[in-house]
Amino acid sequence: MGKRLFDLVIAAAALLLLSPLLLGIALWIRLDSPGPALFRQERVGRHGRTFRIHKFRTMRAQAAGLPLTVGADARITRAGRWLRTRRLDELPQLIDVLKGDMSLVGPRPEVPRYVAHYPPALREQVLSVRPGITDPASLAHLDEDALLARAPDPERAYVEQVLPAKLALAAGYARSATLASDVRILLRTLRLLASRG
Image: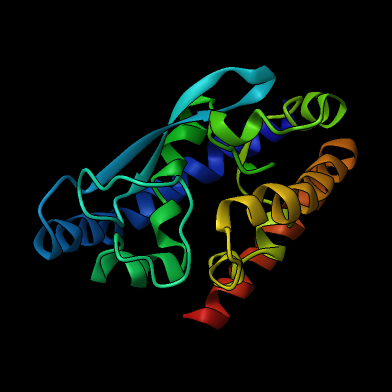
């Protein structure tokens, strides 16, 4: 209950305080390329329940291809590249936190295509908590797309190398998460993103 209350208070306050920035980003996206400002995609949440995640659109509308971005992905728009570098495309997920589909801190929600590769024991553990906007695994893999760009088969590299490493960190979080550890992760996230800004 303490974690949920914390999520609700911080997410509501952040949406209110950041509303001018969110509106400005939405306008920039619409001016930069045809299509909606927001992008929604099916992800797997707590206990395996699927939900539609909210993000700022960073790719050309109706762009096809893998649900991975690799290096200088041609699908990414000019505005999208800037937003992705600073992780500002994730801000609309504050809506998902208010709805109860996500938490501020928790394992990043994957698409069903990659959840199918979770080993059963880790799947149960990682999906026992609400997915989050940030977590130790996402902080450890901030430059994941550059790593995948060097692989002959990016999707295979993701499934066989990146995903197991992220799952191990996500399972560790699920086992030992506390409100204090969530605050530390949030502060570390803000510091890292500020350094990239």
